[in-house]
Every structure is written in structure tokens, then in C-alpha cells.
Length: 305
Image 1 (cartoon, helix red, strand yellow):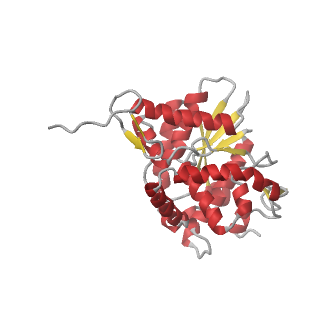
Image 2 (tube, rainbow, N blue to C red):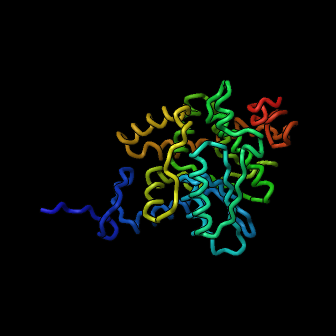
Image 3 (cartoon, one colour):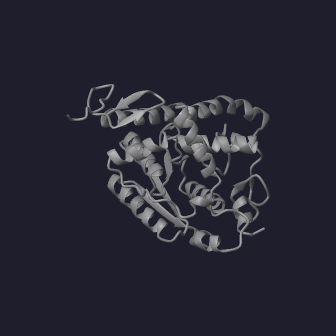
């Protein structure tokens, strides 16, 4: 007796995924449409894409950034007034980064998107591996995150980008929101969704913020998108892992938890922004990058104060 296959609830074809939070079984076609519908709605509601704009996409070569670029190209690729530019940062992580950059190159070549690659070594005269080998107070992820954000922002400014797209998915967003709740860091929470454009900082856009991580990975697989699925060797140092496990457990027991956490944040962030207005933006006295202090966090971490 053959096992009966689960059918898509929209067309009766074989389902490839079950979404516990929606109760839907979906086939490849309707799953792809569901992801792209959510991305289009997120862009329409949160990010005003005008005419004659250049959109930078932070591209690591991993599943999230590759899917973000792929879908944006699918949506906007035929518009002659818009230009997508992929920006990859080589932090200097032996083997891991070389491999992921290879996937980034393959994707941009396949879809015909301009691709810029810059390194920590060229920008900061030190690689992440070299930083990690030194005596340090912070985890490698702290150095990496701050330095990478600073470099990507500078490159986006240099090329005249109006928006800087990142591949943050629903899991990333929920984890960050929860981490800020646990740390009582309301001001940092407000910065997750800046209410206005600030001089020297390219406005961020997160079109995948409503797509669960497992669905991003499945979307990449069923659409044959070249992505690196290996894990960063420094991942174990991140505090985020503990929050990830906690939220995954809640999501399994109570489907929709991550969406609820994000929805609550979206409702209250505007109110919080009135109580915690954005700090005055200055220029770092050392590197000239936009920051809220006399010396930016990147320069402080590198000991340039």
C-alpha cells in the first residue's frame, strides 16, 4: 500500500511544505507565490521605492542575501529606471568566506547584477581571523557586525544608493527584538526601524522580514538559487544562539510566536520613537563616518581612539 501524498490546499498538487502558523499545505508554485507576495507587500508598505533609484544589496553569498537579491531582481529587474548593485564584504574568514563569495559571484553573473567586493584587509588593514586571534573583550561577531555595517554603508553612499537591502528574515527580526527586550535596550529597538532618513546613513530595507528562515532556505532550493549553506566558524560565540533556541522552542509549541513578536514591535515602535527620538548624527573625527559620538563604534573597536 503506497503512502498518500499531502496535497496543496490551493491546487491539489503535491505539497512541499506545511506552514504551522497558517495551517496551509503548499506546492512548489503556490509556496513560491506566497513568499513573493509577502515580499512585495513588505516593500509596498514599508519601503517607498521611487523612480531613477540605485538600490544596494548586501550580498554575503548565504541563503538570505541571495534570496533577497534574486527576488528583488525578479520584481525590479526589468525596470530601466532602477539599478540593483550587490555589495559583498570579505571579512577575511579563512575558507568560509572564499566559498561564500564564490556563490555570490555565481548568482550575480547568472542574473546580470553589478557586483562590488571590498575587504576588511583593504579597509581596516586587518582581517577578522587576525582580529579574532588577538586578546579581545568582545566576541568575533561583535567586531564583524560593526565593521561590516560601517563598510557596507560607506560603499552604498559612495555609489549613490538610495536604499541598502539586507537579507534579514523573520527569525532574525524576532531574535533581535527579543534580545533588545531582554537587555532593556529601548533606544536600540527604535533604531531597528528608523522613522526618517539621516545624513550619512543609507536607509535600510529588509524585504524578507516576514519570511521564516526555513522558508527562505526552501525558496532557494526549489528555485535553484546558488547559495552557501555552511555556517560561519565564529557563530558559536554569538549570544543570539541562546535566543534563537528559546524562540524556536516557543514557535514549535505555539506556531506564530515569531510573527506575533514582530507584529507587536511594529505597533509600538512609532510610539517609542516619540519618547526616544533619534540622536544627533555627527561625523567620526577619525574616519568621517556618520555616528552619534565623536568617534564611531568601528574606530573604537579597532582601538583608533
